[in-house]
Amino acid sequence: MSAPRESPIHVQAADLAKRVGEGASAVLVEDGDAERHTLTAFLQHMGFAVTAVNSGLAYYQELAGRAFTIAVIDLGLPDQAGEILVDYTRQNTASGIVVVTAQDRVEVRIDAFQAGADLFFSKPVDLRELTAAIGNLVLRRREIPDTVVAPPRSAEGAPVWTLLAMERALRTPKGAVLELTAMEFKLLSLLMAQGGTVTRARLLGELYESENSSAARALETLIHRTRQRIATETRLRPPILTHHGVGYIFAGPIAHR
Image (tube, rainbow, N blue to C red; front, side, top):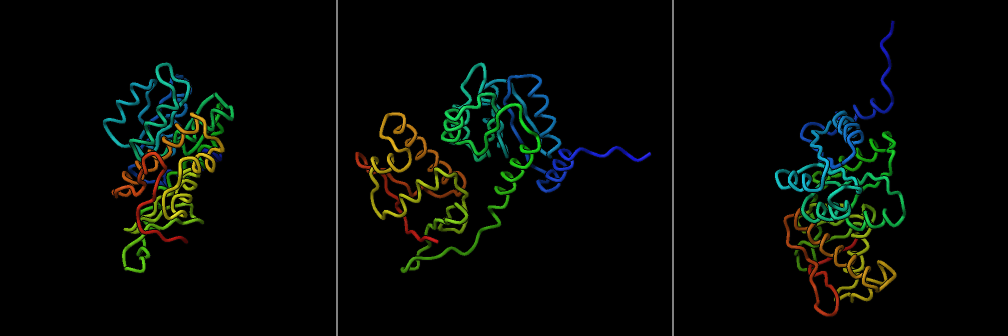
């Protein structure tokens, strides 16, 4: 009798585990016992060392103790809004962020992405899609160091910041490439194209098509998150400066590709 065939999902997950290799880790915050058990087992099959918790407080405690390759966050937690955890994770870590929630509304998706999520899945999660998406997210982040090349230089010979349109990424003066979210790319496109101060009104109009208080808070969060990512992932001083009362400036030599 022939051995039973593995399901396509498990074959796909096993292949990912081989490519991700050792050292990949995931922190999962999910208050539902059944969902937490299922996602923990599946992430482990994908090759991740998994730390699973059931509350926002426990999640913060885990983040304080170590770094994780990815964070998988349920939005419907008993003690903390999941969007706040997403924002905290984006501002304070270099983890890829995956949101899993039963709240499948457009407004919820927008809030999650604005807070810094890389991926969004509604429950029940299709494990085939989850495998493919997380695999691409992790492997793209793993490939970033391999993209380091000799950076272009200004006319004066100084290394420059380069916005890579095709890759939706920012190359630093040291040659490292930082992959950007869609909103981060739009923000830097505006700042780097201007060559001077870009007013808050223009940024709000271009990015959010609104100048209300909600859009203003979203812009402040986006600026803070982009600065934090540049500082954390490139070890360089973020070149985005505030022109108080007016707007923002990209303060550094620039090239475009």
